[in-house]
Image (cartoon, rainbow, N blue to C red; front, side):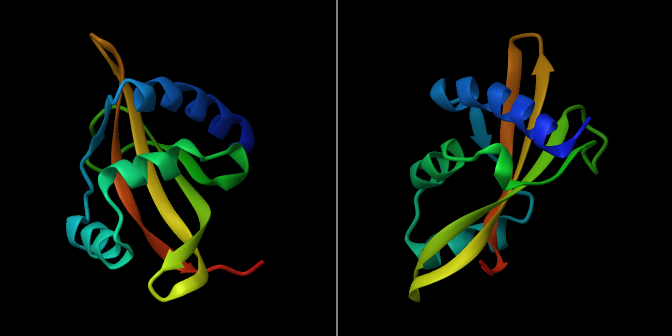
Length: 121
């Protein structure tokens, strides 16, 4: 399955989870994610809005199995973002998400949400 097509299918599954607030906030590297969020003055709600804007062209890699062996598809996206601090710098966000199906249907988590580095256009 091509990356763009896989990303498209993943994002189709992601939209209802965002709308129903069924995408849990559980970063694996909590310190890195929280430091980025604090530096930028972003709330979890802000992050969900940014995640809702993901498109197939933001695809970086996946789907891959979770490192911890738990069920689900892990996908990584790189999304351009204009920093708040220092203001105006363009960077890429590293957004890692996981979706799986349980007895109640699809469920998902935010595994990572932080800067990936400087954005080169």
